[in-house]
Length: 448
Image (cartoon, rainbow, N blue to C red; front, side):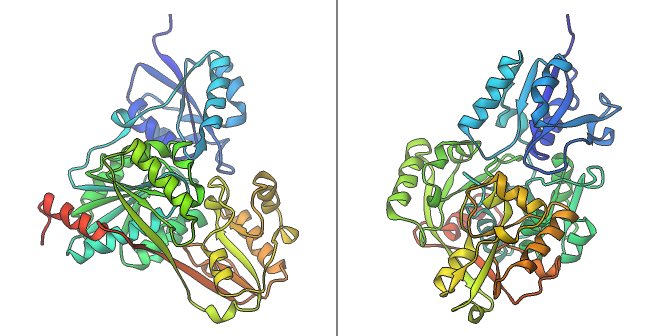
């Protein structure tokens, strides 16, 4: 008889590490024999290091590609496989479950009780039902509103640790220079840069208990912790106010993707974003789905307002649109803010980037065939950055529209005129975030 259950955690360098840290790391009833990795290039073939894995794992824990899952179950005599990453259709989740079960192991999902950490500060979480719904602009609006109340807000971002995991255990970002210091990928910069440009402090990393402790004691002060979610995952921290953002451009997905429905069902506030560019019937579908599964959630309808720093460059020009990578890839969107800006400002043509694709971007286009006349800003490492730069510069566009939340000109050399697109949350119904947060401030005695 085995005294411990052998476990594989199926992940993508985020929720998987958090589940291990909170539930398995010091649990002598289990032996985590491996992580498997998906979605993130080049994360497999490494180890979750001993410095993070704890006393029960002096050699660390190997990370394998998810494609090896079935053979790993047999190789390690695995009892339980824990699914721990986000933004997958239920069909895909259960296909993985079927593979696990057919190989002889149990298929498990950990929930709130065993994975959420309680803060000694009030916590607001901003989560979503899909990647690319507008979490970041919502988080920025929450921060700005609380700052107007004289409060110090520290944001904690869902993990994206793809480099040196020991060095990334706890990361603090206060300036744009910190992005370079921590060797951030484009995906990380897209999330952190809008915060630090506004003077907000943001934390991220690997060990979210240590990160929370650091955030609560931030040297600049902390009155409220803001959980800034990733993909459609639910919060790592117990929220005192849970906000979930939904996208009517993908109406119905809020009930079809894991764990986005968890984020919806636990929402105190549900924001239907992008109503200015969505069909009314899709807005109604999303609203009805909220009422069906989260009847006590307050519904806010909002526009995603778009501004362009050099709008005169677009009219009548052939443009290459570069959009947020994850939104296009596993978020499955065909367009983003850059495309909307091009259409509204009268671009003569949005060119197809595929004929100019270089290196890893060719693989991206093959893997995500739904991507049409937009270029995903893939930049998980130096090679992808070089491929992105080469693809942009090889194109025959007159102008490049940067629809990502960070300035690509800071990390690659674009040899064509560029214009950036910015987007913000504008609520158009009552109650709105201002009134809801005013009540939050009152309820938690935070008035300055």
